[in-house]
Image (tube, rainbow, N blue to C red; front, side, top):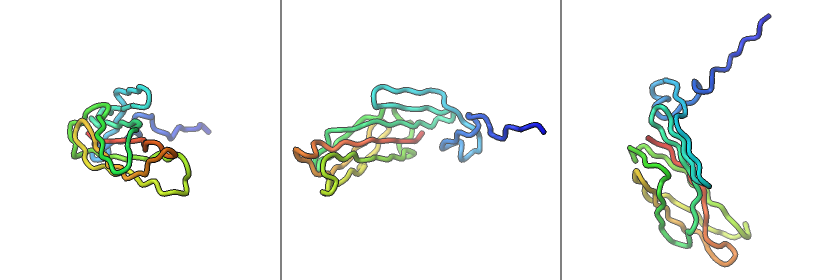
Length: 129
């Protein structure tokens, strides 16, 4: 009996925004990483990118640039993960995305800052066209 490989090639199983709509396989055409900032561009025009933000403090709004611009800011979805330091039993608040353009995003922080917690930091990821 001959074994058959039932797993498709990697590029055939990558699916991005347009790939999911059209059922057309897509693949990574370009990648970039510098420190904590990175991005991936796909053959259908989808971009995934992310990085690390710092310098947020209590009740402040701050704007950060994307690593690479999106063509359509309405297609962008984001995820921000707050990084806490110090005593985990005390409330430190959170981060909310308040606006997104093709070149930057703005976040609001109600995170508590003190000598114990320092500035609030976070990882972010965005995906869109």
